Image (cartoon, rainbow, N blue to C red):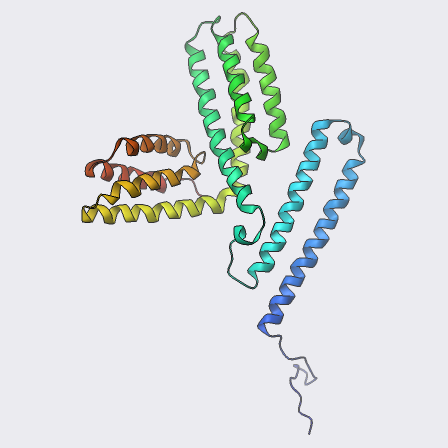
Length: 298
């Protein structure tokens, strides 16, 4: 007699359960259809925006819309590639999404450059607080030059359009201030501090959006290197200084995440370059661990 392969709860025929490969294929297909639907919707939204006079009549608004749409499209394609590949193998995003590692690297460089810019501008503000009114226009010109140098870096290409617009505006205000014969003590802080607040906000968003996984990986790798340093010290091996210097250099990828950690890295690099004896290596190791533990991962 004919034997049924499977039965439903009510006694009727039901298809046999899907195999693991079939379920993964169905999962990938679902991701593909959902991604295609959302991409189509995003293209439609861009078309609507391109028909709005207030968008196409302002170049900054137009550039912002086009850049945001391009970035969103690229990210969704990346999500699609990563999720479908991850359904069949244990892979990292940078292994399967073309260009993703370069995108992350560019944003690591941007965050580090932004931290250097912040330190430079803060130094100008400190000098301005002690300067005379006649000396402050020169400091305004120097601050504008710092902004110009920042936007000339290849890393600045990763900036979002609204941030680029603010940089252009800030440069214009500082350039104008630099033409004055004298500036009061409140002028430069009034020009620079709002820009620094905006820069901090932009870098926090960049870290949250792009660098959280990267930073945790660097943090974990730094911990592994510090364990190696500990083992070298216990054995009295000269490798402790070498590995510690490598750890400080590699942790530079976290620059811009925390101002105290940045200050530690600058000092640590200097100490490592000057040479470390056993006592110096133990001291730097202890401070390194303390700073790693205090990094804000939330």
